[in-house]
Length: 342
Image: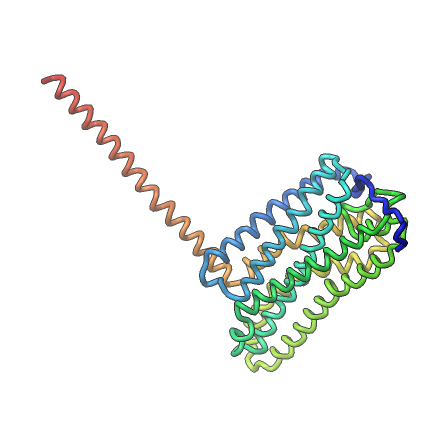
């Protein structure tokens, strides 16, 4: 860049998604319901993993991280979408827009990388069952989670940092439902080729490479299952992967559909599809794990049983205390009556 060039940074941007859609307020309410569900469901999953000692394993570190990322991602996105469109606060300051973008893309990055962690866990569990606890230890999983967090934060800081070199001397209207990176850098009136190159590089590193790894993982798992003699053992091993396969499908299929047909989609259809792609997986992920994972189901049943037993134990105590207080009052009244008669 020319060192003498003045960078024009607008005071604010305008987020203009969902324009011209009839009865769109119902959709905002739907997003709000999904957000509340995702916070409650993922909160339950995180609480189960924290409270149940049997779930403190390497696999459930990845599951806990996925639940945490889902809550963080939806909390970064949905409340702001509701405030922007339902309450018509479409103006967002320059710095807030970049912050908004960073947190949304960081959580989307972590969601993709977390599927890699779960794929790695299932691959080792099925192909190297005798060495599973040696390869996938608590320390190994903690290090992988920490590395992916550092990577996600670092690459998204670079993406946001490159935006600060752009001048916005034309339009400041972002045709999306949040501060979309692609929409932002295309508004610039100076050279945005570094941003475009970085975007394609990150899409490859964050989306396509993890998807390729997951596909290779399941090809390897399929080859390992084919060597198992008994069909019952194959079915049992396949069931251990079913929950993760559903998570992969929920995350990647909508993204692939959007990328494949984005050019043919109307702008509002693309925006709604992208918003659902971001909001729905955090709602469905905990449901899938509760329904498909035996350990989570057992832990949930134990927690519900303890809660029921504690309620049953409290009720008789309340009755006893009530009877004792009544008896004391009666004896006190009788004592006062006898003293007055005397």
